Length: 165
Image (cartoon, rainbow, N blue to C red; front, top):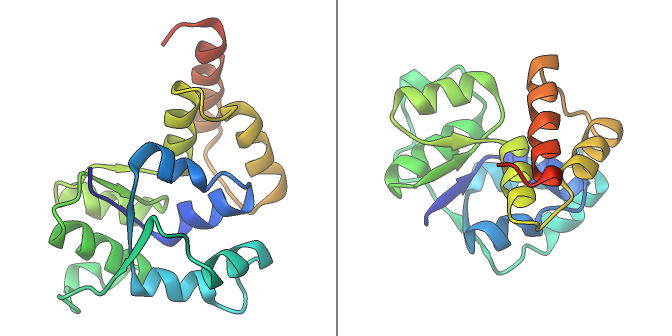
């Protein structure tokens, strides 16, 4: 399975110490250069900067061949490169949280999920306590989501606990 990651899911999963879920779920994750620049930025959370300074072997940093696509001009550089890399690599999945980026990726026929989708996938496979990870996410990071998305997430977590999926 080919998976490409934008900065946001990596950022949040690192902050809640759940980034290894990506390796457990997908084996290897492709990350464009612009995303690594965002993760290494001086303003990044300390844990993220430390992680980006010693990238694990299951992360593969890739250069994007196509550098310009006007349809992506409204997105930040990391989102642009993540979408372009997902297209170039014929990725099975793009990890991206931002609404505009997800919409553009879907318009291009790319399958997407975000931070919450990764936590749910990990919870479904008993790799993480998804509800505890979510509570840490919303209490210790700047992660934001719509109330209905939070409610749906917690309902799905409850289904894991009761054995219904």
